[in-house]
Image (tube, rainbow, N blue to C red):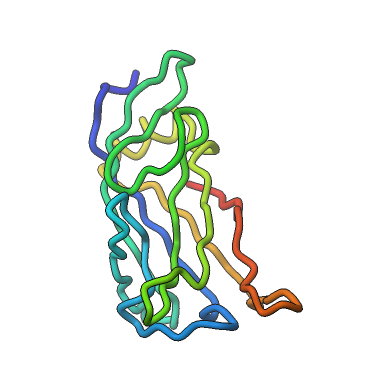
Length: 145
């Protein structure tokens, strides 16, 4: 049974290009916290971008994991993480919502017992923009393991 609350790390790897329309710099790309700060990635040897960040996890009233902390966005039962690109003027050029709902209690227990993070990889082969020039963001399901 999962201790509650528990501290756990999430690890995200992004493999892809920046948005089609983006005026930012490397400092304008990262995992977004609730204070709108972006935590920069580590450049991986294979060219990807790696992020590792803490989460607090509790057992919800439904028995499912409920995440909290500076990187957990959204209401209970629909939490997610933002992967964001910010323009030089401070406005977001693009944000991806990465749902946490696929993380099971068993996965949390295994990660805690093994002292390892729960990880996911997001691969975007080709960034897209609409005909009006808006970057296509939105929810991007990932498999947390």
